[in-house]
Length: 334
Image 1 (cartoon, rainbow, N blue to C red):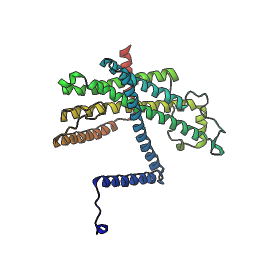
Image 2 (cartoon, one colour):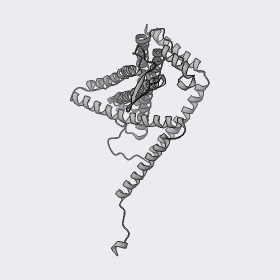
Image 3 (cartoon, helix red, strand yellow):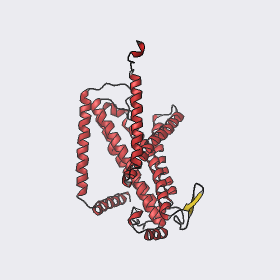
Image 4 (cartoon, one colour):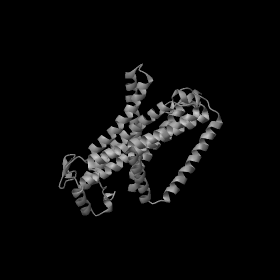
């Protein structure tokens, strides 16, 4: 009789089974996508995988260093801990500039060479200029993305320190003040880093290279000659673009995270910690979820409007407005 009885399945066993099934499905889906016949699909799949790995590695590295720094400070005054948060962010930003520069090949006298070979297993194969360029770009982007994410988490941590001040417990609406403060801070420090890069590495009269972004868009022979003749200028252009993109991502991550933190505080009455976690098991009302969903929908609509408004202006007009604004700031500093 017992052999014919139906075995009962516990909730833990069911959860483990579903997790394994989902993991296998996810893994096989990745195998399918990275081997898709469409090269664009492969490119974006690997981009998402790389970004995901970078985010997790970045947050783990930052949290480890941050915990060690504050443990070393011990019972030091709160000002010392706040300055340590600021110092970490500045250090990671400087490391972003330096490491991206080193891996980009800009400092090499001849970044591209003809008739070069490399080892592939036991064989020597041709190391074309295109391969050299792709390797330098991948290496630079790898480190820029990783250090950029660490800088982003350090910036969020600094903004959280500002947002958790004693004054904000009395006036919750002031938590939104951290958003424009951090935006202005990032815009200022980003402009300073850009001026330093241009003046120290390329001179005031630096003109960005007009070489196509994709090597395959121009004839191979023409591309090789351009890379041999203007290799450092081409790499410098890519370096400037990559670092500027990383700095923009740091600012965007910080501002958006702090805005969501302040919004959650207004809706739920609970201000999460610096990493966005509620340390206690608060049970919020269903209306809080509805309000947060409404905020998300409003922001999506606002994003669509901003994209359409930006489309009204040409890239030249946007670039001119940026240069004019930077010139006004420079004149004001003088």
